[in-house]
Length: 474
Ligand SMILES: NC(=O)C1=CN([C@@H]2O[C@H](COP(=O)(O)OP(=O)(O)OC[C@H]3O[C@@H](n4cnc5c(N)ncnc54)[C@H](OP(=O)(O)O)[C@@H]3O)[C@@H](O)[C@H]2O)C=CC1
Ligand SMILES: O=C1O[C@H](COP(=O)(O)O)[C@@H](O)[C@H](O)[C@H]1O
Image: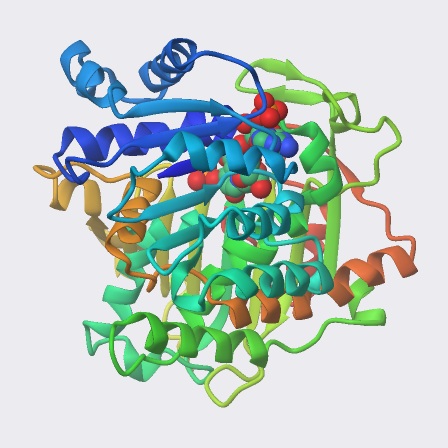
């Protein structure tokens, strides 16, 4: 496996710890090596030290031991090169020599602006044959046009079956459990539709700011960084029809139908159905944090959004008229990723207290699925309270280690299973829906609304639901 961008945040914080765990569990092929590539001129020994420091910090203490590390680090190699220079690929080819007869995986953990060069130069150097796979990190491009250009360049070198477009939310255990819940239990199917569902909320709130990724994030913003990919993928899994088989083509066919059924948000709807925000200074967990525009490598007049909320609608038979409220933001009060399926209220109210009637799927920080129902509270009188029928996944499967999303997805790449990866048309359909919203923001000069770090986002994100008699489930 060749990791372009091997010294970056993603490689050091997510990929190497995931590969370490897979190695420790005996899941990596015995002869598999990992070659990290970046421009920094460091030795293999120094790279191994760098990798060790980050793995120690990101692997739970109980799973890290010196002997396993020694064996794992023997798989690690480092090769300094500039991925935008064709000549460096001849050096790379010589470095690889006759190794990798069993196949190669190219993991592109770099900015998407390098994807086209990397694919083209691998091909020129004779390094892209039928025995290779390529993994592309999100976001694929910056817009529909740039995504199409990337996909086209990649497509000239690799067949679609060799391309793995990763979205790590699809590797999260609870996200896959959502499919199990929907398609392995008959209970929900009859009520999983407009007649019974009032609305859906998909909320991914982070306490983190932009960390060391200011220069990337200031060009991207929450819409391109999170909503175009992770949140729309979650929406697809909630809304899609049952695939005929659990395989890559069948699952992705159903997801793409949902993306194509999303009602366009353009013109005045951009003003009325979307809210963008940007954090100002505030406090999180008792600590002062600076405003976004004071973060490292961020323009101090930046109008990039660090928060977005919007109302989407899936224009098809099953979902017509059901609002899907999507929200994501950085520097929010607490980290939580949740999907809420709010069922309609009873048609005739017998009791004073109402509401609950919801399915709550928690992705983070704890994974759980719970059905919130109204029940009588003990004692005299008929007083109702919401109670939870709780499927605590960590508790239910407590003997088994919980896999991180990247572990599962990396193993899928190694084994060639692309069910949990995005197909070209999916990525392009997502951009086709997102692009007019971003253009609308610029056309209406819709600057992000300020919200203090440590809050639940700008006021307008609450009004979006309140004006329809609903509220975010905090
Ligand atoms: N960080 C994260 O948690 C996530 C990141 N992603 C995506 O992954 C990608 C990488 O992100 P991230 O790791 O955060 O970015 P970083 O900026 O931390 O890392 C970029 C890496 O690319 C290398 N690089 C840059 N230019 C070149 C070049 N010309 N030739 C060779 N190597 C180069 C850098 O090393 P050097 O400068 O030494 O060359 C570095 O190793 C992005 O597309 C991002 O959107 C997706 C999901 C999560
Ligand atoms: O892809 C990304 O995801 C992370 C959030 O991932 P999570 O698994 O911690 O929820 C986000 O911080 C980052 O900005 C984005 O690029």
